[in-house]
Length: 322
Image (cartoon, one colour):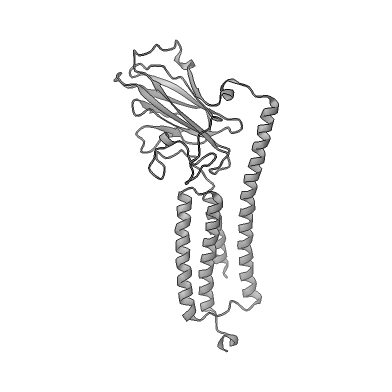
């Protein structure tokens, strides 16, 4: 096997394994694959049970806070808002906020407009403590109903149970309905676990939670590195076998063309099917283990096509003519 073919196989494996390790760090889309709105459903690919078949659930372990929210707005007035996420172990994450199209948002550092949303905002990179603004409508007859989704992640780069999210809705009333606080910037609305909001954990509790999270991270990352390394070793062993067969074994055995053609067609069809299956798995955010298994089967099918070709082109030997 030529050096070029070896590099293509190894490079393909590396790309396929890396494809599922990146989450939506640049901000979520407006809709899920089935057309549902993330602002209504939440970050269902993340958290315990997250994935394309079983939606991840919100958890009160995540505290979402937004500061600077008035009880009622003044017409055509801009309010500065601060969005914060809090979790026992995770630090950075993302958000999406929407006011049902009543007013106008203004993104700040680390945030951006959500494409095709008509004005919703989301994060543009994983961080925390986003400063945005909201301008109330000139027409003061409508209440503004907000939805805020927050997702705080464990930093492993994949959709995993270590991520956690929560969401809540709140209303800013039209002028004249309620009395505002003297200083609107001091008002904060939050949702989350009562202890996270008002209680303090002991050092022993904090350390126990940290150790449990650390053990879970080692288990998850250990599986990732073990199976990835195993796949690389399998590919390396196949490449080594090809090298020794050509260098010391006289090359691959000859395969008659009457057998090579149907065998090559069958293996080619299997390769195309697995390639389509892998694309669907990545697009559907299957767990990395499933995508890795599909990728290895695809590489094995491609290798089968390669072997059929080289055996059909191999010269006939005396043993093939008997």
